[in-house]
Length: 246
Image (cartoon, rainbow, N blue to C red):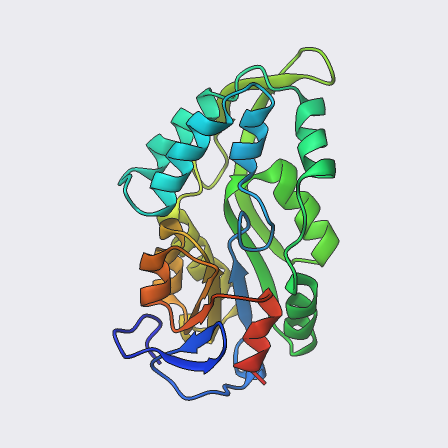
């Protein structure tokens, strides 16, 4: 089953399109579902909201939008530029973003629960940050997480951001290539084929992992992502995927 397709899209319900296959597919035929985090599992782009604490949201959001549309070829460079603008943000500021602005998107809990009930493992793989990703993991009961670590230096309110990220054992930054590599790595760890994986996201940096998965899903996504995905959820919650998978 091809993960990305040039076939004609078919509306199977308002705000839900499929192409390249005839639904429903069997959920239990898949063994892993991989989610992007920002604007997919959660309602915000965390880096933009963190930037608001130092009055730089518009500047950072403009870079984020260009990166998500695929207009910036080097995602790592775009993220480093945005993180540099976060210098001086306190941990208390980030906690405020988490409490006041971050929400799990509609249908996320229901979809994760249905996937786990059908025997799938759940992966969160994000170009965002562990500060939020680990909390989303704990809230939804996610099995695996890969995300970026913001460097914190001593300062008021439990420390502040240095404007840099911390290298991790697997590499420096989780970009599109790393998302793809992570999905394949977890699939290998589980002893399954990429065709048994579902990959779900909204931005250009999700396309590499969507391209190797057996089922690619665009959620309220950028046009380039919608065009290439096998399933596009354009309205409603994440659990609308269950209209395609039984």
